[in-house]
Amino acid sequence: MTRQEKIAIARIFADLIKADRIVDTSEMEYWRNVCSKYEIDRDIRIASNDISFADAVKAICSSSDRGLGEDLLGDCRAMTVSDGFCAHSEALLMITLAIMFGSDQSFSGEVYSLPRASFDIDIATAIYVENDYDPETNDAIRTGYRSIFKEFQLAGLHFVYIPKIIEHYSSTDPDLFRDILAFLAPSLGETGIDKAYRALMGMTTGIYCKDLLCNKCGFTELRNTVPSILIKIGNSFVGEARYANYLKIEVDEDILQTVQKFVDVFTDMLSSDVFIVNTSEERDNQFHFHGFYKQLLDIFLVRRNIRSAIVINPYKEEIFFPDIDEKATGMHRREKALYALMLCYGSAGINFNRPRTSAELNHFERRMNKFQRRYADIYELFGGEKDTAPDLMQPEIRRPIIACVRRSISRLDALYNPADYTITKDADGSFAVHVEPGLVFVAPLKGDDPIALKESQLYSLFEGGRSKRQDQERQES
Image (cartoon, rainbow, N blue to C red; front, side, top):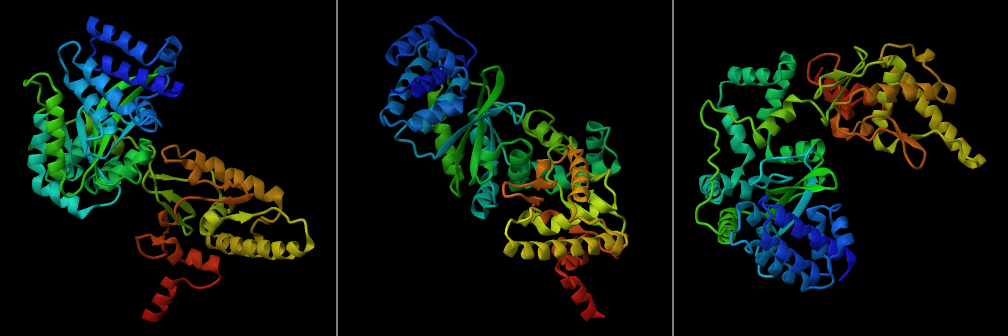
């Protein structure tokens, strides 16, 4: 047995002992036997405080000793009932260990631990999660929602299905719901409340997982998740930091049968036929503001870590980030024109380093001349004189302009990962903006709806020709 496996075992037992917030004599006696069996000394116990529950579980799952998990699971079961009682909080950890270590389980599961400051919901909350919309599973949930909800409820767990929550919000009078949002976030203006309301009403499980859990809360492990149930199984400390632990089990169109099987296994672990049942449920004219519900609303009302679109308006000399309701400030025409040009280049970027050989130098100079012409064209679109556009081929002119763009974007602290939105220098020396192309739009000269960058007049200048939209307008006329 490796030292890391001993550390993992110590961590698992420590969390199991502390789960019901009671440490008794029988558990301490069993703990001494565990330390003797697995050769857990003081150094191992100290080291176990610095790894998470999820890392400990993964260490046992990846062990070369195939019997270690089963053996450990047996010892955990024995210790859980060593005081004559298996509490609800202990059963949540035990079913997790049974799924991860047991050879006879039909569930496919994963365990996660992450800082509670990032994402934290009530213990025993079970949320349906998915990265992309799965029609069969969602149809099954809608058809069997009441049965699934009650199955979890009878086991003391609270089932959350995002579309059901949004359906409840959508059925409320819009003015009343806006009043509630304004009450919860008095600092938001009318525009901010309206944006929050529309974003909330358009919420789906996929958006919740990708934009909120992954981008805002840092739960990146869910970025490509298949349809699953995410269950909060407990809290613990890693060092001095508070962590939340989660179990994820995969589901499909047979979700009701999976939930019933899960509940049967879970309730069999409990020592009593009587336990607290969570009756939390939103009803007409009632809106919960605790746990998951509070966090969902806070995400829309506290505008932080937002993956915003970019709207370039050269006619007003503005660069707008609509999802955070902010404009880029501190940039003049020359910086805005460069930023717009760099967005046209996208992740490919542009390299300003002069080559060492004469053969490459000719190609470099042609590329730089093309870059300067493109910049001058876009500079003119922003209202400047093409002939007086700053010469970006000169480093002493180019560098302060790039620095100004970086300072301006860095002020937008509500953005998720501002580094994607600014001009960065890659390992190969190229300068680029790495925001997704689908997030970049251009305001038209006429009309209100922004146009995708590659369909705009601005991009046509970048390509040196007309845009598709211009061709369309020409044909129509």
